[in-house]
Each structure stands twice: as structure tokens, then as C-alpha cells.
Amino acid sequence: MTIERPASHLFYVTRLRRPLVDRADGIYFWTADGKRFIDGSSGPMVSNIGHGNRHVIEAMKRQMEKTTFAYRLHFENEPAEELARRLAGKMPGDLDRIFFVSGGSEAVESAIKLARQWAVATGQSKRWKVIGRFPSYHGGTMGALGVTGDLALTETFAPQIQPMPAIPAPRAYRDRDNLSMEERGLRYADMLEAKILEEGADSVVAFIMEPIGGAATAALVAPDSYFARIREICDRYGILLIHDEVMTGAARTGRYLGGDHWNCRPDIVTMSKGIGSGYAALGAMAASSRLVKPVLDMGGFQHGYTYAGNPLACAAGLAVLEEMERLDCEGNAVRMGTLLKGEMEALSKRFPFIAGVRGKGLLLGADLVADPVTFQSLPKAKATNQRLVDLCYERGLIIYSRRIRGDGIEADNFMLAPPLIITAEQVGEMVAILADALGVLARELDL
Ligand code: PLP
Image (cartoon, rainbow, N blue to C red; front, side, top):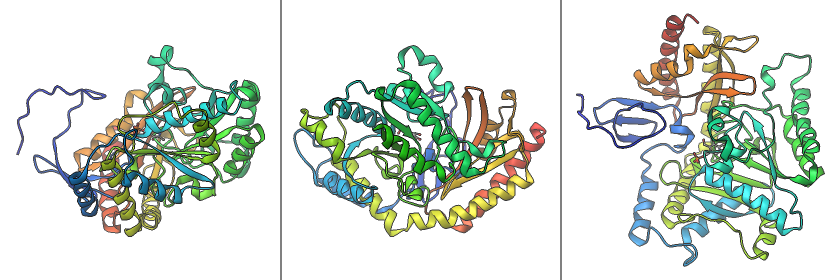
């Protein structure tokens, strides 16, 4: 059945029109014309507990009967208090204060501004630069774009963005030198120290990184040695370490936070996506009282958003957290992630244009390349990543794929990141579709 649709008055990123969604349950979507899709990327790594969760829906209904909105400057609300308590309990080190927002970019803006205001409040007002990494993605707002390393997203807006210094992301798996992975990890971390010295240590307030790379680097995992060295360097120069866990948080990688794999001790953590799991627009920044107290003593954090900490979003977040624990999402992400990664490795043997399979838990990625040894990129004209997305989509599987550009880098990649409740049988279903799509792609593009 094909549904006739009027011209659309919406506009999104491209002109592409997609089918109308009707409903969703678990890892599946159904469209208005009856076609089923596997959500192989949880949207953009959002729907961690899966779709249609009854416990969350009922909790939201109960909250809606009470109140959906009460402005934080007029009232406190119990769902926000309780969710902050529960999230603080999951944070590393002394991160005991939670600042709610409505999305990932807002969380990153909040972290950049908290770092700056902390510097001012503690008599370090010359410090303002936030060093980022290239490639990286930290959001679409102007402040977040300033620390985002992806020219395809920043170039047009360059005159309006305050560009921040950046160091290369630790893409050690692509390096062709005689160093061990651990030596490479240290080499990449030491680039932070060099950059701090180049910029002048007293001008730098923070370093922001995704503990496991997301949209720009497709589940990039740094060598183990990287993390402790980064902390050491930040401590040496009195620089705050911000972990952007918007994509990696909320059990996505098999631990509550991506940084938990290395017992990281960041000063600020940003989260969104999985903490609302698609039930509510919810984001959060976690920080230590160490940073928050001087800022509040100064007269308050000069920052905030209207919808922040609203009771409906927080009630949803609380129910999501309860379900995440009840369904053992961390454990299942490890079990199913191991299975899916093994399948991706098998596919990369069968299709050599898939290289560098990587990731943790159910945040898995790989590059699409012309040469699996040198990682030489495929020509842009082949538009390989978009064709792979389309071939999967036609077969009822949603995957996530990007072509990243800039600073000598042109790379097609793709990610698989289904809801964390996926079963082994459903992993098999996903892989069968992907394998079929890859076969067609290989023939069509002569890969
Ligand atoms: N930070 C990271 C690491 C992300 O992956 C994203 C989104 O993909 C963002 C920030 C921005 O989040 P949002 O799109 O919710 O503003």
C-alpha cells in the first residue's frame, strides 16, 4: 500500500523524503504503509532501552497527570531531584552535581561555559580556550562547533564560530610505524601537552574529548595508555578534563560511561541521547562541587535553558534508568556487542573494503576504504557510505554512516549500534541484511 502525501512544509538537513513512521517496539519500526525496519543504530545512538517500553510510558503518563512543566526558578520537582541523585551515583570520582538540559549540544555548551565561569570565579580569568580533537563531533550549536573537528560541518560558519585549538584524535589503528599500540597512545596524549605549551598554559581552561569516538570517528577506541596520560597532563597544567559522553553514556558501550572502561576521572561529563532513550528530550552535565561552588558563590551560573529539568523529561529519564538496570543493558551490550563485533570482523574478511572494525559494547564501527592495509580512502564520487545506507534501508535495516572531511582526512565509515535489548537472533537478522547489502555494494561499485 502506497500512501499519498501532500508536499511537506518541514525542512531538515537534506531534501530526502522518508516514509512516515507509524509505531515502534523493541528494535523495530513500522511505517504507515506497513514496512518493518530494524533500528540498527538506535536512531543516532539514542534508543538505548528500545522502543515502546511500557514502564517508561506508564511513568510518563503518571507524571503528565500531575504536571508536565514547572519552571526551575519557581519550583523544585521530585523527578529532577531523584534523577540527579541517581545519576550522581553513577558518575566517577567526585562528580556530584547535575545540571539538566534538553540535548547533547546544550550539555556541551554548558560544560564550556561552566569551565570558563569556574576560571573567572577562581581568579584565572586569562583561561578561556578549550582544546578539542580532530576529527570529532560535539554538537551543532556555535560553541559546540568551535570544539568540533569536522570541516564539512564548520567551514560555512567559520566567520561566526570561535575556533578552538585541536589535536589529532588517537586514530592509532591506522598508523603505520614501528610503535606498539601503547606507545602510540602515549604519543597521541603527549600532543595535548605540546598544544597546551604552544597556546600558553595560562590561556587554556579545558580539554574536551569523546572517551570513545562517535559520529566523526565511528567508535574510535584509543589505546589504553592514552587515558591516564591525558589526566596526568591536565593535572600538570591545572586544566579541566571534559568527557563528552553524549553518545557513549547510558550503558551504550557496556559500562554506564565510556570512560568507566579505563576508570577515568574527568572533571565534567556531558550526557544526553541514551539517558532519555528517545522518550524525552533530556541531557545533563555532571560536575564536581569543587567547580560548582565557586561559580554559585560568584552569584550563580550565568547559563540555563527554559526546558531544563522539567518534571516530564526527568520522570522519563528516571524510568529509563530503572529499565536500563532491570534489563541489564550494560551486560547485554557486552554480550551482544561481542557477537556483533565478531560478525563485523567476519564481514571485513569477506569484503576487504571494510577495515578497522572497532568499538566497545554496542557502539561498533568500521571504515570503508580502497585499501585495507593503507586505509586509503574511497573516491568521494563513489558516495560509498550513502549507497551502503540506502541499500540497507531498502532492505529494512537502518545503519549510521558518515563521510568525514578535512585536515587531510577524507574517510567513509559506518556504525552499528542497535538498542541494548537486542537478542542474538536479532543480531543475526541485522547481519544477514548487512551482508546482502555489502554484496550488492561490492558488485555495483566494483570494490
Ligand atoms: N556530543 C556528541 C559526542 C554527540 O555524538 C552529539 C550528537 O551526535 C552531540 C554532542 C550533540 O547532541 P545533540 O544532537 O543532542 O545536540
